[in-house]
Each structure stands twice: as structure tokens, then as C-alpha cells.
Image (cartoon, rainbow, N blue to C red; front, side, top):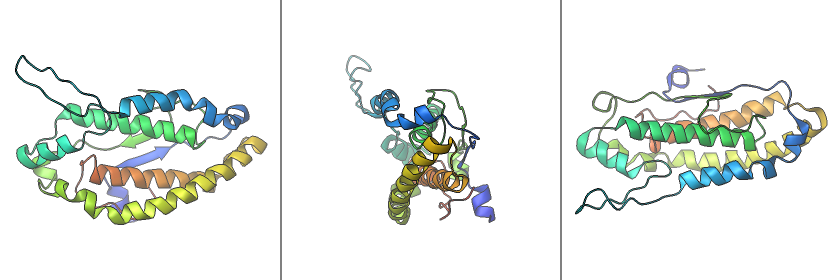
Length: 210
């Protein structure tokens, strides 16, 4: 592991399960429907039209607060802490849902507790840690990662299908496949931290490793 991978300011670990439940695994797609609906609802957009008698503000209150954060960093060199808290909380929740859907864990995803999915993304000191102009182009600079991730997720879905049979038959998740899927999610989180959460200017490493 090189120093860039080890010190990258976006980390993910998921506890490896020694044994998984065959029944909930067999019906995982059906069982995940309620939490997927909740995730969809809080990731959608809504509007708040009344701030005062003569002022109207339309903003994205669901999903990642991206454009507003770009403008705040560029023009004010600020990243409001509650915006960061919302973005990180949503990322953690969606990652717990993904780990459940990908059969990595049996626990039903919590909306607020960490459970077995551990994410660390430090709150940035904008003036010290971030270039105020980079948020305008980070999404573009990350294009090579998007392309690679498309192929990685195709492979990950195939691995999930293979693992579904393995768990139903043996109640165990193949460790090598587990590490690969976690690596794909980890890669995604690093790209998200760089290009969309805007918490770091360090370019994401091209690796599945921690």
C-alpha cells in the first residue's frame, strides 16, 4: 500500500461477517424495498419557498448538496458545517443500504447508526486545505474514474450474484469477492469525496485497497 492510498482523506471499511442468514439473503431484493424507498425519498429534491415575506429560496434539500457547496467555496471560501454533516450522513446511510443490497451484511440498514460500515471523511478547512477554484472542474477531472467504475460495477454485480448462491448454500460470503466489492465501494467513496462532496483536493488513487 502506498502513502497516497493510506493517507487519502476518505476511508471505508466494512466488517467481514463470519456467517450470513440464508433466508434474508434469498429474499434480499424484496426485503430491501422499504429502505430503498426511504433512501429515494430523502435523496430527491424539494423546495422551500418561504424564508421571509419578500424572499424566496429554492434549494436542493435532498441528495448531496453539490452546486450550493461549489458556489460557497468559490465565492466565500466556506463549507458550512451542517452542509458537510448532511452530505456525510447521506453518504453513510446510502453506503449501509448498498452493503445490505450487495449482501455484505445482514443487519437491516440503520438511518443513523454506523453499524458495521465505517466511513471516515474529515471536515475540511477550506482556506487551508482546498483550492477555491478546483470545485469548478473536479467533476470533469474525475471522468477517468467514472469510466473505470462502470466496468467495476458490472463485475461487482456479477460477484454479488455468485455470492448469493454461495451464501444460500453455505451461509458464507467468499472473502476474496467480499474484499473486491468493498474495494469498488471504497473507490466510489473516494471519487465522491473529491468530485462531489468537495472535502479534499487530493486526486483519488486508482486502487481498490484501503
